[in-house]
Image 1 (cartoon, rainbow, N blue to C red):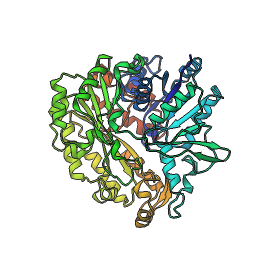
Image 2 (cartoon, rainbow, N blue to C red; image 1 turned 45 degrees about the vertical axis):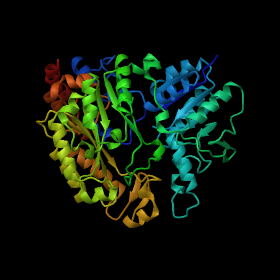
Image 3 (tube, rainbow, N blue to C red; image 1 turned 30 degrees about the vertical axis):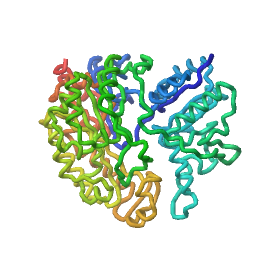
Image 4 (spheres, rainbow, N blue to C red; image 1 turned 30 degrees about the horizontal axis):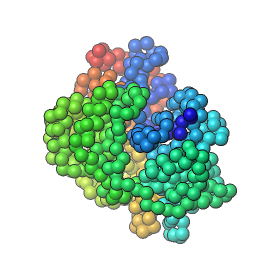
Length: 535
């Protein structure tokens, strides 16, 4: 008996952050704390294996989309295996092909467009030319929604043909069938079970196929179950999923906010706050499997519900003993008890601040103020909670003056003497189809023209926004960009003071390297004493 499917969660390629490519590299590799330690220990060379690499880092957490699919399908009697990052796991994928799988299931949660999807499919076809490939997820569903707008002459869908599916037959990936649904798990189960029995699958509802030069769509049905129907049974998952010591989890699903730059699809049935008892049970389950860090991948932790202190109190009361990080709105943290938050295991919060200019925040529909941001950041950093902040440069209304305001805001909150560390990721504005700002009325309001990474409006262009990112990167000195690949145990072993010095030193060297100077000797000189402190 062969496998019913191999699930692929992600390609393993980099994010859209413009500050990521600017980070320090050593011998072409991202200068994580473990790589720098290896470099220092070996007196200016890197010797494999790098101790701590691929473990105990936020980046080493397997993707939740694949875990959720694996759990959903296996609980329904299907035999599946999971590939987390395809380009890092090619050898494992080849071995799995030896188990004669009937299909490959591609989740597009972390695949940003048609081109990277086509590249992935081409690689799969080179290894398994005749295997049946199924794709679903956000890219597929957003492409379908965009297809529905092609009849609106005021809506630009033509520009999107190279990045989204279904809009043309040119350059489409060699995928056999798409599941076109907000969720799609039920359709996928029916498809895989039909294939197992040798039954046809082409006419299943909510699917699409490229036939010749046109797409054929099967009849649409409402196949979306309530969000609470998609829980994960962690106790049944294979050991290798827990190997890194870090696991993603959700305390809530969905987001009730409508930021103007966001094109996430929202449905009230998929907006759900999970009971605290479920979180406690699952955190205990993953802890028993060796997990010491949990990344809550909520869009907004528990949808911003006013129970953060109560939840942390329960974590303390139950002795969970797991460190965690989450995305959370600043307004949710305004009245948080930082001491309780830290005692409950929170070591870092992710904050989508976007800008520190009041007018730009209003244009974004962020429903927040720079004053609120300042209060929250100061409280968290002084309380020993690390803050990773995300900023967007160039949104309509942005000027040199508003960008400078954001730059000075970040600089004023670096707090070199605080127990918590500030890190950041900088993005130029992306004009995304299906976001509110993409609508013709909003475009006219700001004189906004263009598409995705190339645009201009009344006060800025995409090139100017990239310049603001670079300027900000060089301006900051007592904080640094986010390195999700850092081994958390090694980073925390430095202590608050050593960690702050490490972050600032690494960022200083990254800026020096960008000027073209040889910094190899400076890496040794700068970090040797730091690692002695953390020993």
